[in-house]
Image 1 (cartoon, helix red, strand yellow):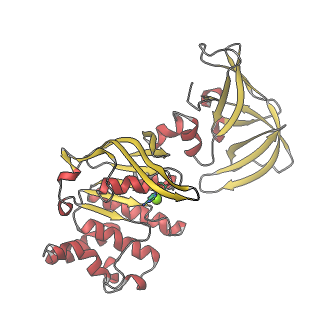
Image 2 (cartoon, helix red, strand yellow):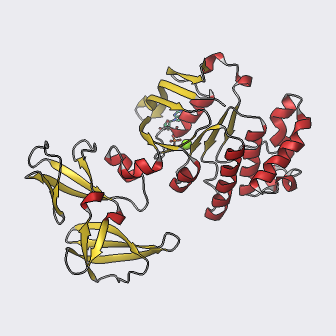
Image 3 (spheres, rainbow, N blue to C red):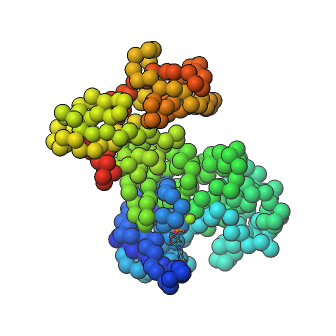
Length: 361
Ligand SMILES: Nc1ncnc2c1ncn2[C@@H]1O[C@H](COP(=O)(O)OP(=O)(O)O)[C@@H](O)[C@H]1O
Ligand SMILES: [Mg+2]
């Protein structure tokens, strides 16, 4: 297994615009250390540089500046055939006119080790519980989307990768297939631990598969930590709003007499060194606002959305110009138009500088 280290990576692409070419910074001073055997998930909005990051780690794209190391070795000094990178893309990228067996065994064939292939395929099938053997004679066009992605995973694994890179591999599958594929992959990664980077836009997938999650924005890593830490301890508004579904509630307010005061909620003690009247945004996740009897802030119910597997109702309310979401137990019966009363749990409140978005409490 291999630790992967990135040091101050920069990558700019020239892009054509109406007024000529301009440089787009796809990766902007990114440093990262992935431990040997770690699975790192990468989340971030479209265009933030996730695929470019993977290609740089794979050695497929040269950074303008900065270094990539596999253990102690600079990636530029490792010949491509010794890098041992297994990649799985969104569309599988299988060779269309080859049967699955040849696709899976490609690297073993190259190294004249094709006699190892049947045993590997059996082993992968055993671990995933998925009948890979039944697909071996088929070409990619004769496989379903889910089957193609499993063949792509098997192909990447069959070559004994040092580093496993996934670029939204299951994003084209429907939710049920995606859940299956995720469980199989989790089993595979437990059996064959490989240092992995997993780009996804599915937070459930990130939580399920990864030890740590990196949140990217505009070519940088904003925060990297366990999902739980990102959820409860985001360093800024971007991470706070990006992580967590349903999304965190935000309330505008200011510092008044060392307390945070908003339009409806307020009176919560806040860091004492903040200047009076400073604008501060309070963030609270939907489970941090509670429905109270008839005390608390009155608000009118806009919508009620049951989340059966998670056992809650997501209730959207309007309190005289401010709107927020509450997660209440499924048994809570409220109807749109009804007035409810809400209290905000100050323990669940996160405070952000309204100007910079940085977390301040
Ligand atoms: N080969 C390329 N040529 C020009 N621009 C590119 C190229 N690859 C990526 N980009 C640009 O770099 C930025 C990051 O792209 P990408 O890494 O694909 O983002 P993501 O995978 O997060 O959606 C985008 O603005 C994209 O348009
Ligand atoms: Mg991408």
